Structure formats: structure tokens, C-alpha cells
Length: 288
Length: 267
Figure 1 (cartoon, chains in turn orange, red):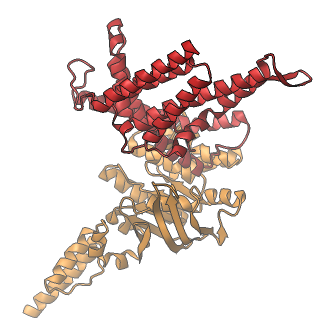
Figure 2 (figure 1 turned 180 degrees about the vertical axis):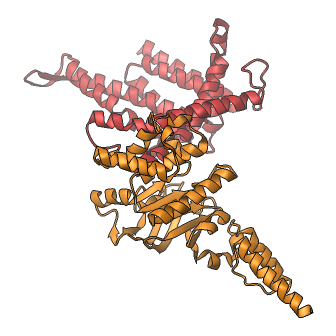
Figure 3 (figure 1 turned 90 degrees about the horizontal axis):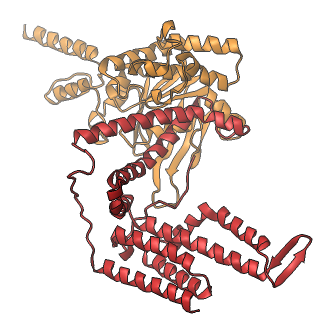
């Protein structure tokens, strides 16, 4: 299950005074089982891009292929794309509408016309995956707390058992504790299901902790692509396009500018600690 | 899901019409619509047509854009035309077939009614296209003021309209977002029979209502936090003032009205 985007361009309100190019000639490929981060400043085209991945938006030009098949070929391929690629929107809790948590999560599988038993199995698995306990199943989703609502909404997409899970800013608007919870839940999800996950964010810090590969978007174009290590080497360039590398990357850069020689591709605190103490110990030995 | 309605959409441009006082524009449109019903012969319609057309040219809005407003009422107009052509029976028969009888009078009546409707829509389109919603509600509030004495809450009505207009684009955006989110969960809004379609609206309408109520509550709170308490003692940042062009256009409007009435009485 791979997703390939070729020469994708999307223009809003084409041929009017309000014309806006949101995605500009983008090319990339995401392989099965990868955990990819999509980063960009507000208005860089992240949300527009992800809506192409399951065919909610039709490209102005260019193509999106899932397993080598263009998704806009016909109605069947489009429906297949919607099922294979599960999209969790920003603030997904705003889409809750049913009378109980259980029914709301069952909405997706029901639309797929599955059998009762299969729906039941999927709903229970999905809710268990996001850590919603049994006693909440019959509650109204509107009685839940913000974090719980979001997890129920994510379960609503998971219950469709998509092969690729795309999440648009899943941590937006949560407190630090809620952010960490969702983040680690997504990580366990990836480990358990070994599915492909694409996560959209503007926070480098969050993304760098969990993803294998990062795509950096700027003004609708793909600016950088690579492992977090490779991407964060460009800390200052990232800043120019309105993004921040993890703070520790700045510390290392600043130290290196003051004649230290530390590896410049460090982006976690633990690594930095190790490198710096190695350096200090080395310096201590030299002094002796 | 896209709505494409020109009525009630402001088109910013720099023209005399845009700068006119909203009270003058409102009163003139109102008067024009009444006068359309006073006029009942060719000359009256010609004069009205020429006037509304020159006003449209003055507005500096692309004519195509103004005529788009007619699309919303095209069926009403067609219905009127067809109905009158076949059911108004006069003396001079154009042709007769089975029970269908078309007369010259019928054709005339339908042309008259159709042009009356077209001009009516054009006039109100010009009003809303050249007046920003805020100005419009200001004008309406002023127009309703005399009714305050008999207990009509003029200010509150105007405020409600302002808020409603302000939130139309927001809600449209919301509809787009929620319908996409539900489509991602396999919802289909455009398949099946009418009952299926109505049922498919539930996952869209429930979240929409909830967010609308939340927004309303938040807005009310924000307004109260800034000491809003209705009309009492409230002053305005932009006070409406009549200028020279307002007087000129009022005079022109009176002249137009007198001409229409004279045509009706004398001819």
C-alpha cells in the first residue's frame, strides 16, 4: 500500500479574482508502513494536500496514485481510496453527532455496509486502541471531556480500518498532558497495527519525536524531505519559512558557532546530553 | 456543497452608488419597487427600465454579475410567463389548439409581469451589491426607528441581522468542513432517494447546530464582557450623514416617481 503524488497542483477559485494556488507541483512517495510527518507554516498547503490523499479534493492538475492506481479514475477507485486512506480532520471532535459514543464510531463501518458482528468487532477494537473504556460506550459523546471527545472521533476513523491513517493536527487545542497522551497513543497505534501514518503539524518538537521521515512544505511547495536528522540540520532556513527546529538543535548550533565541535544533526535532549558530556569528559582528560 | 446566490452579496467598488447613504438607497429601492406597481403601460416600463439600467451602469459593477441575481428567480419568472400566456384570455386570438388559446393580451400581460419581476430583482440586487451588510442594517435600523414608539425593537432587529449576515460565511465554511469529515467516514450526500438524502443530512446538521449554538453563546459572552446592553445610551463610531450626492439622488428619485405617476394618470 503506497501513496504516490505526481505533479500535484491545486488552485482554489480558479479563473476568478480570488484565485489561490495552495499546492504547487508537488511530487513525493510514501511507502507501506512508513510514519511520515508533514510540516508547514499556516497556509503552506498542508490541509489542502492531505485532502487530496483520499480524493476529497480533485487536483487542478497532476495525479494521486494508491498502489499504482489513479484514484480519480472512476467512482469505484474513489470509494476505495476513501476506505484505504482514513483522514482525521483538524478538531475531529466537531464531527461527532450520534446519541452514543458506540453509535458514532459505528457510523463509518455502517457506511461500508459491513455485517453487524463485523461492525461490533471494529467499534470495540477501535475504541480500545484509543483507550476509551467500556463504560463510556453508551454515553453521549457530548458529555465527554475534550480529550475523550477527540479520541472517540479518531476511533471513528480507525473503525474503518484504513491502511493509511492521515491525521491533520491531531494535537491542536489540547493541553500539554493531552498532547502527550495523543502523541504516545499514535505511536503505540503505529507499533501495534504497523500501518502507514501521515501526521500533519506545525510543531517540529512533536513530529520529530515519532516520525521516520519529514516533508516540509512552504507556500505549496515541497521544501525539504528526509529523516528528522537531515531536516533539522537546516534550523536557520526552517526559521525563515516560519518553522522552529527543536530547541536543542539551536543550542548545538550556537555551541558550534563558539568553536565547539559537536555533531550537527542532533535533535533530542538525550543525544545532546550524551554528546556534550562526551565532549566535556574529553576536555577534562586533555586538561589532566 | 456550494451556494451561488448573488442576492445579498456585497460587491466592493468605488462608485457614487457605493458612497450613497444607505438610508437613501433603501428608501429609493423601496419607492422604486412600489412605483413598478404603479406603472402599467409601455412608457412607464420604458422609463423604469432606462432608470434601473443607468443606475446599474453607475454602480461600476460588471453587468454580468448583476444579472446573475436573476438566476435565483428564473423559475418564478418562467412560471409567471407561461401561466399568463395560456390563461389570460383576451379578444385578439393569436392561435388556438385544442383547449389551449393564446391571445395578444395574454402575451402582453406576461411580458409586463416578467419585466416587472426582472426589474424588481435587479433593483434589490443593486441595493445589496452596492451596500455593505453593515451599512444596510444601519439603514434598516434608522428606517425602523419610528416604529420603536409602538414597541418594535429596531436596534435589536438590526443587530440580529448584522450578526446573522456576519456568520453566513463562517457557517458555510463549517458546512464544508463537516461534510468533508463525514465523507471521509464514508457518508454520501448525493445518492439514494429523497428519504436517504434527508437522513444523510443528520450527520451534517447535528454538528452544525451544536457549533452554531456554541458560537452564539461565546459571542453573547464576548458582547456582554464589552458592556453591550442593547440600544440604551449607545453611540456610533460611524454616524450616518447626508451629503450633496444624497440630496441630488433624492431629488432624482422624486422626479422619477412623479414622472411615473403622471404617466399613469395622464396617458
